[in-house]
Structure formats: structure tokens, C-alpha cells
Length: 205
Image 1 (cartoon, rainbow, N blue to C red):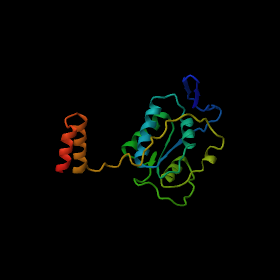
Image 2 (image 1 turned 30 degrees about the vertical axis):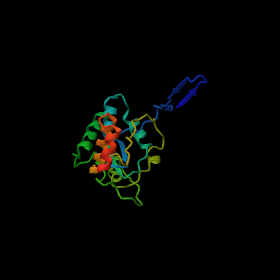
Image 3 (image 1 turned 90 degrees about the vertical axis):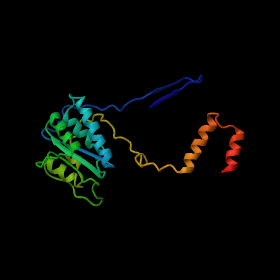
Image 4 (image 1 turned 180 degrees about the vertical axis):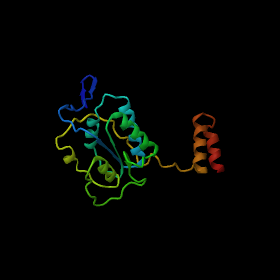
């Protein structure tokens, strides 16, 4: 973001985005591996839904660019999902399966256990994209520098939702004292209770 402040109080702001150079000659043909990771199950599913909407409204996107761009993000968090696909239509179908939890027995898409993967030294996933996806969701590492040794076209993707650690905690039940204080404040603020009445009320408690 670029900000400019004028002496007379004027203010201007300009938001710029990184230029992502497209190199159409770099193409990794065949089945593509799409990986996702997040700090919580809630955040992971929320992003899968956002990613699904993103590609549904941008049907001209190249699947190779999506796979490469996802691989450049943080992918070592505990809650993971992965899918392999040949085209955008198949990608959308497998995202729907991940969101509904109806994972096919023959593979195609995978998700980590509900509580996430356990931390520790992990082996590097090897083999075909489907084998790598399954191993990744069980905690394996990915050698993405080898997978994309020739680079790729990085595109701008939607961001993960920020999840505040306190945002989803239930609120404590109100106590009689807090309810009384709230009622008293409302009566004073509305003019229903004057200073003399307030003093009488306090002395009788």
C-alpha cells in the first residue's frame, strides 16, 4: 500500500498487487496435485468452500497454474486436504466431495483426520500424484522443488480466513450483579432515575 499525506490535510492511498509474470511455455501436463493446509478443521473447510467458489466463477483458469500457486503457500499445517484432477470440472466435483465428507473409496481426494496430523519427523511423499496426496494427508512432507523443478505460473488466489482464537469461544452467562448493573445504567441514561432516587436506591442495597 502506498500512502500520501498533504500539508492541507488531504490524503490519498493506492493499493498495488505484485506482478505475477506468466510463462505459458512452462506446463506440467497430466494429472495435477492440489494441496491445502490450515491451522484448524474449520479454517480448512472454509477455505475449500472459498476456493470452490473462486474457480467456479473463473472457469478460464488453468489447472496447472492453480496447482503450482497452491504449492507455493504454507502447506505444513496440521489440517490438510488434497486432490488430483485432470481438469477444472473434475476439480470442482472433488472439492464438493471434500466439503460433504463423501470421499470415494477409489481415491481422487483426501483429507487429514478430524484432529489433524500429529507433529513429528515425517517421511517425504513419493510416487504418482495420487500416492503423494494420500501420504501428504497422513503427515508426509512434499518435495515441491522437485515436483516443480521448472517453475510455473503463479496466480493470485483467495486468502484463508483469519480465525481469532477467542472468536468461537462461548460467552460466560450473565450474573445477577451484571444484570442489575446493566438495568441500573439504562434507567440512569434514559432519565428515568434521577440523582436523589439513585442515592436512595444505593443506600437500601
